[in-house]
Each structure stands twice: as structure tokens, then as C-alpha cells.
Length: 267
Image 1 (cartoon, helix red, strand yellow):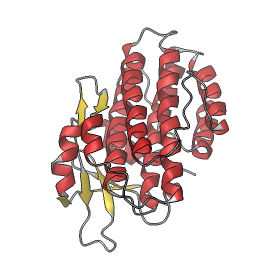
Image 2: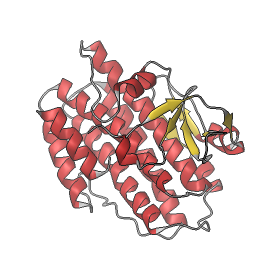
Image 3: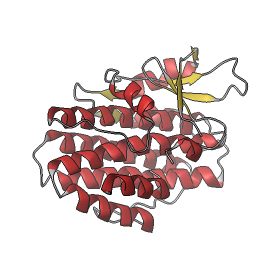
């Protein structure tokens, strides 16, 4: 959830194109490493195997300044989700907060694995609710306050974080990431899809029809109307021009597009 996009999403909560298309073929990476790297329980809580991630993270691929910033942002973004859900779990007994908080701890550790491999300084504070990035700090404070109003508000905050995270993870595809960054991005995105399904399910159980804030309705529906993902991979969309990587879900691929990811968000 890049700060600017989440701020906009939060404004909506408080008061181009992002498309889905069929997967045409899977890369060797998707059918091998990633299939065993990601696991999900029956509640959709998704974890990443750090040892498997290390196996594709040599730290020797060419990495750009933008990709470094993406990694640093994702490290704190995943921490924000963890700290936020853990804090909300003290107010509400609904298991979704504690369950997904554990998964987010795993996700932020996965990002650290890649940061460490490249010798990039870790921006994350060891203190809960404290962030180096001032925008993320402000967002955490605002989201926490909103989530403490009622259980429904807290669940909506969780759904907002996850749907926006789906878009922001895809920012790495603005460049030409190596297999390690692509693998990390897909694993994180799979987790966010499952976690979005989890929050939506609890909202539905409480009689609330959640309306997506960051995702288009059709893309949101495609996610929540599909089953928990136990593992997925990278999908190459062939014969469509650039041949760029597509992020693959259960029978669908989320196309980050070639016109800038921010253009794919609601305006």
C-alpha cells in the first residue's frame, strides 16, 4: 500500500486498467520453487518458506534503485499489517486478526531475507507500531484509530490493507525484476489475496457486503469468489506483445499492465 494510494483509499473509507485474463502457460519457476514455497491453511492464512526463498535469492542479480526502494517499502508495509492486526486483536477476539498477524510477521521476514541477501539496510524498527517511513507511520496511526471504533471498522481496515497491498506488490513489475523479486512478489500477493478473502468472509458473516476501495469490483469479485490458494506461480502471457510477467492466481492472471500501475487504481 504505497502511502499516497492508501491515503486516498482511506479517505474513501472514512467519508487506466487492472485486468484479469486467463493464464496461458506457466514458467518452470511457478511449477517448481513457488509451488512448494507457499502454504495456506483452511482459514487462508498464508506463509512463505524462507529456506525456499533463499534458494532463489542469490543477491547477485542486477537490482535498481527503484527495486531497492520497493523492497524497503514492502518490508515496512508488511510490518505495518502485522503490527496493526496484532494491535486490533487486543480489542477484538475474532481470530482473523491474530491468524493473519502471524502470517504478516512471516511475510515481513521474507522481505528481510531478500534485503539481507543484497546487503540492503533494514529500515524496520523492532518496536511495534513504529516506522521509519513517516507516511507509513501516519497511516498506521490513522488506521489503528479507525479500526478501534467497532469490529466492523476493524475488519474493513483489514480488507482495505489487503486489497491495496495486492496493487502495491505489483509495483516491482514496473522494471525488470529477477526471479528472486518476482518470486517474492507473487508469494506476497498470494498471501494478500487469501487474507482479503478471510476478512471478506468475516465481514459477510457479520452481515456486511464489503465494497472494494482500491480494486475494481470485477477484480475483487474474481478473488473472493475463488477458493483459498494453496500455492501458485508466475504466469507468462504469451502472444500478447511484450510477453511480460503476469501474476497468476487460481485460473486467472492479474495483469500489472504496461502503462503504470497507479493508472490501474481507482480514481
